[in-house]
Image (cartoon, rainbow, N blue to C red; front, side):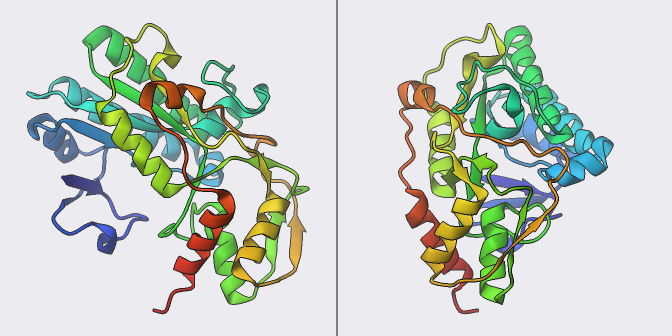
Length: 288
């Protein structure tokens, strides 16, 4: 196993024992050489600029990392001596936007609300192109809102990690907009399992964009306010909830239909939200 990260947000300590680590940017020639010459069976493309706010403030930087970086790796995979299956981490929330009524199936209209969603969808089109034109073995996993241990509560962190840190600090929880906007929260171990299954599953050919795209979520909408209440119950901590103006690029409702992943990948989420929140808070609250 080889892990590539530029450590702009990741931590070297999270690399598992026995794995080889390469400190590289996915846009670099060195990353391309690694893919071309590595003789890998699978390449999991998880590296990304993933903060919607950053993408709104600087769409060029978002596109440089998410689109140009991805093309660099896809070109390398196309020219590799031993071509890997490419498993791409996309977004099930930001890709569909508010054009689709949740839960969104894979064939839903796609109308991203942010440059981040646009960049992820753009890479999906490149994946379909490389599959149809060059015969590259590609898979897209459209994640719902992933949460769980090790998520950084700063920077581009998800709301669960941010709320956990605020509960530990005894600070109010900040809710943007009305708090009625919904998300589909999927636990990190379920996402990891989906990646493993996608790396070996027998898959259909690629004629259209959605043929090898799979939603990875729960199909359940949870409002931000309900999430705040559930997490406080799990943590057995109570703090005030403060409201702030709605943020640009944020959609109002999101959840994904997961029947296709169940049928073709043999995947279903195993973690209930209440238990997942309790496990996540316990990790943040551990000594040291």
